[in-house]
Image (cartoon, rainbow, N blue to C red; front, side):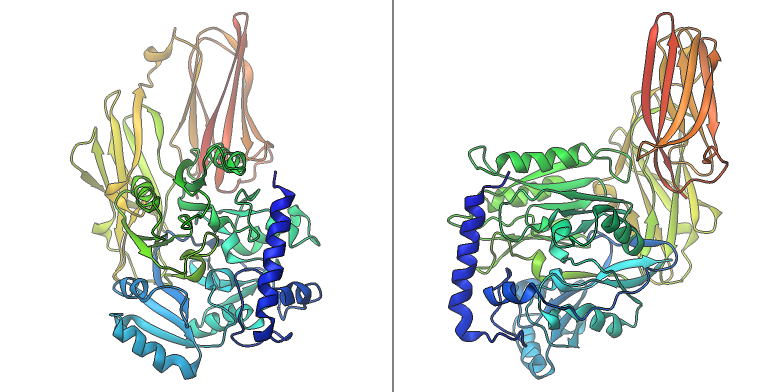
Length: 578
């Protein structure tokens, strides 16, 4: 769907720009050359035969989970000389540590500029290293959790820039954490993840790894990053860079921000395609993604790089350029992310394909308090209670405060109240929201704190944007006998180790009830028999046909009831959380 004339134009611009720079660049990649975000002419020529100094490793052993941008960060990584304004550094330094990669001879100069621009120097550390550029998002480290300890995954950077390519190794040594080498040529700007085993890139990753099949790439991403679902999409932007952060962004586990262009723009259909694609996908929480749009027309007279933003704990930094669309971009983030502080960061150096996100990288908190929970959402039948189950894991190793483990909930927009969570086993806790009347809307979030000083909520922002569900009916025999055939769903959901699936039959029927995984593979047949009209239930214990425990994730209960009156089918999500 891309127009070949655009590709040709971009190539001409790239070559012309590169020729203008040849007086300043030797044919050997060296320290701090005059380089652009795109490949220069010499790099295009060099890249064909370039051998990267990269050491692949075996994947991590244990449970691997890649951390997301909207999880807790202990710091942010930048490169000096900076590609961002000092005002941004000053604001970020009020809350977290600024880790600046700087050559040793430039550190004093960097410190002076920081001090003169109001940076909190008590929250500054310096990593002495040389780089080719300041695009640390692209070449910097990717953080993962391996059995609840933060580690780094390195990869061959898709630019022939050896100093940049070495930074993940240097950062791993600086922090004294494990380093793994994933042999996929990649770049950080073309990657995002949700912290719950889902990731996304454009098809650039396929093109740059033509020696691997998509299945092989998916397998490496799963082995090294724990990504079970890898969305690889087209690039709608129509630019040379083909990075996903130039037009899209995960804002939460079930929220995605996608750029938007006018209908007259030749890229309009492509932008709508990727927006519709994500709207049709199931998030790790079992619901479809909420897709938010931010208006990003062609960058004339000012660029509009609004998806190239940085989420840093409870703040969001959005690049603005003086465009007439800046205010609308801020409003889009405010709508999508209630409870967050939204900062517009003006800088004359932003470009449509190169802004704030490209030049920073959050550093996952090595002592984070991690809460894993699959929320109760949507319509729920009336029950005696609603069990809220979560894993609450202090990466610091410090114990949690038992009296801090709370489920806050409110009904129909009232005031929050709370119930205490209790230990089930290991790091698993439950709290009980009592039964509510039909039609009630329940909003809730989980809170926890530990002795290292960490205090966290799930969802991350807590009360301002809680999980919600609505009570739609009751679950007694009398309520459903004699009414329409219906698959009512399962309780609890999420579940561990077993769940009860309920359904009603208006007439005597031949019933099948089967469990499928997200790949459409049959996992287990629970019911295959003739049954009388009335309320029925069956239990799934989380095992497959061969009696083996299945892994955590999303499954589907497929219900079919056939009788003389016709055929009824229904499918509902079933979520196993271990």
